[in-house]
Image (cartoon, rainbow, N blue to C red):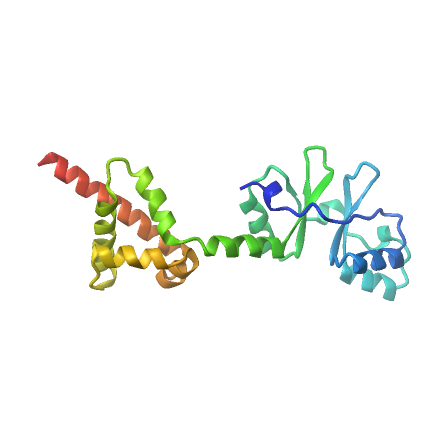
Length: 211
């Protein structure tokens, strides 16, 4: 997924010379807590938040340029960047939103943390069954039954739980990706488990071919 697929194109922008009071009303009208500051070519020249507006009014500032962050202080991404880069930056710098730029430096969108949360929540609702279905497609020459049997064996080996291939198949049909992550103790452990299953089923296939 690219940043352009995640970004919000319904954003507002302001100029450095705009009056702070007018900008505050504009942000309130469109219910925006942050907004990019742009020049006549829509290139990013700054960034302001509702907190900056409040501080500016309290300190008696008049114009946006008096309170805005400079471009060097602004966390941004390019529209063709991988979406995960925006997620990582939002987490690292703890920002509410990130401006998205094109190759010319013009603002073409904004990624907000609420958009990130919405996308991640949709991913969390994917059925685990679909992940195994994709895995089965990639493991050439391995049947679905072989994959389920290997999954049950790896689960018994790692957890001690007595589970059959049929039980495992029923479990992944009902479970979501998010539930599986919590059940296995985190994203890393979930994928380590998938890798272990893949390695095991391939090893069994090779062993059988040698007989």
